[in-house]
Length: 185
Image 1: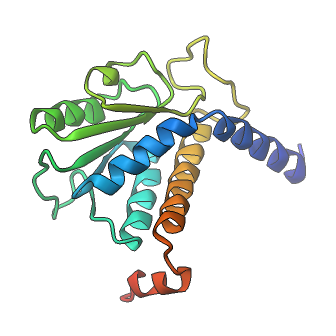
Image 2: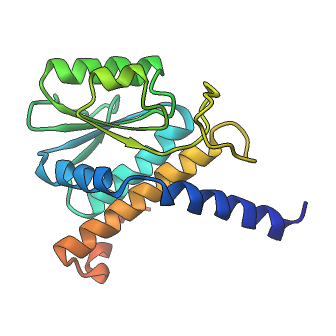
């Protein structure tokens, strides 16, 4: 396989996947983000890396974000939103944190691939990224990429799309965002 062929296949998968993310659920997530005092994020592994990038981007837009487990993590309240990234919706740590957040009456949005997961018991909103998970369910979209790469990539791009929607909605001047960029680098 050549680079060009592989690139085209990966981009084709991403386009197909993101075309099948329900726009209504993305709009609902956008509203939940805007109405929350703070937005917390939880995931594991490569999903967590995608969520960290999303949290950073939203922080650049003036949204108070926090990654669960950070040393400076504040207490979650009923005014906050927890965004859970879990393709299968069965990963123990994110599921346990979502249950704990609900006990404090926080809202929970789950971005995942499995609509029948245990996470549905505690989620106020489910945003489906229809890709293959570690569960290999019959309804999942196959990928040529290893393991759950397509989910993590789609999650990251979905976060950037949400950021762009917020920029447009708030009529933020893109050049002004540089003032929020890290300056101790």
